[in-house]
View 1 (cartoon, one colour):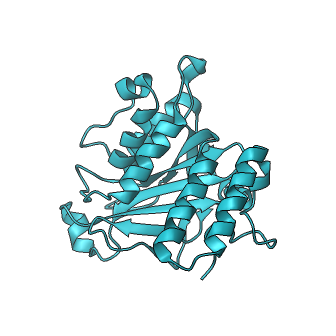
View 2 (cartoon, one colour):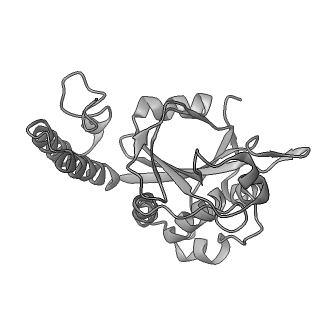
Length: 246
């Protein structure tokens, strides 16, 4: 399989965008990559990969709430799907998407019962972030289930239709993107159960967002009966909607 630390750079040392990070960060990632190459132990490689990602995440510069307004069709409408993407100063993306397990059948979703949750996580290169902004596509991501099954690589892609930036309203308050990212990563490492009514993709996205500031905690929390498109539209009132591909 591909080296998860260096899978995009033909020089075999870093992923695309790492050279746009501060020099000390870039050098540290190179050192971690060399350690990765010097071991075949799966747990050691996983730990080293996480260390490299932690360095990249030190330089988060923004975050967006992303939405597929056509997902989960019900009767004559769609409930939608929300996910979060953080972006660092190098243009690399950190994508988190929560939903029901791929093994959950349609009847469970329709009845809105509790079932295994699944959280996708992927580091995107700057080119992949630009493709997302143009086409709304996030290619196959690593995922974990709430049953703690080892994460594997999916062989499909996710498509989104719009996004909105998570920024301060008129720069009135500070946003701690690292706190948001840290919480998102905790959710990935300890995936919760899914419930269409009480813990769907919007609940998880909202719980990530409110870590960013007291303002968000006060005004951007979510109630149990708020569905994805509705929550996205509420959040988009802050900074507006970017329609992908338009």
